[in-house]
Amino acid sequence: MSTALILVIVIGGTLLIAGAITWFAVWSYRSSKRDNAALLQRLREEASRRGWRYEERNDSYCAFYSEGDQSMLVSIADEIFSPRDIFARPPEALEAHEIVSGTHRGRPFLSARLRVRWYQSGIRDSRVVWVRAPKLGPALQVMPAVPLASRVNDKIKRGDLKVGDPEFDERYQVSTGDERFARAVLVPQVTHFLKTDPRKFRGFTLLGANLDFLDSGSDQRDPEKLVAALDLRCDLLDLVPRSVWA
Image (cartoon, rainbow, N blue to C red; front, side, top):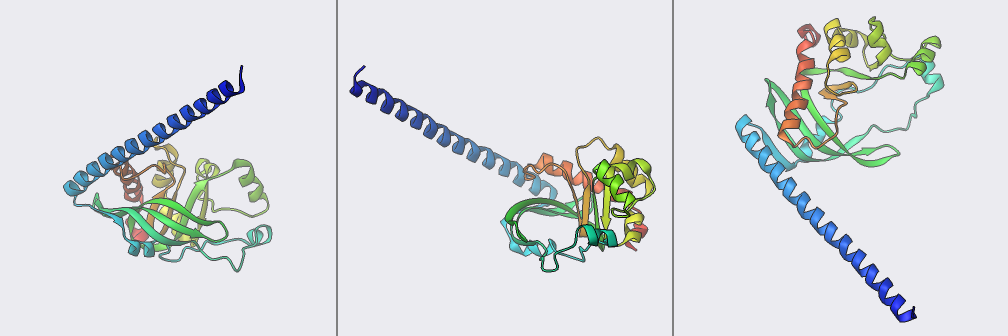
């Protein structure tokens, strides 16, 4: 086979592959653009029906990100084994995009994509779906526990709050800024809900007055997904005794 023919085959093959990649990129972009336009149309129709508001960007909502006292109690063992960086700065929300706000089941909510600056690890996007609690409270975080690590931490008196429900205490790690507040929130009906509800989530955070779940990070501009996320958060708040907010 001549050198010229080899070159023709190689160049022709390269052009075909490049053309195919370009076509796919253009098709994917146009398809994504159509899907996004359809999603926004559904959202605007649902927002109009429910009295919600959609904004492409409004950075004033960033103020809610660091609202209230978000510090957590730590034990002496925590300080010894995982000393805090005294120079560390808390994460800071810089921009708020794709914002849906309004009320759901009588509770104010905010869904947004935030650009957040993290100490040491840089700037990342974070999707939040916050349902507002009746008032500001101490920080509370309920995360999945690592069973072996949890048992070791118990032995050395280092670790999370135990609420007295063995199954819940085994499955979840509780961090808080106020133990009395955490125990008041995590009453039996709440821990039962967290153990048995079939929806997919890994825990929740209550920071300031913002209740958020560790659930799917998918695009919550989809009205169906957003309503499902809001229902999950409202279902939990319905179980928290009103006396917690007194």
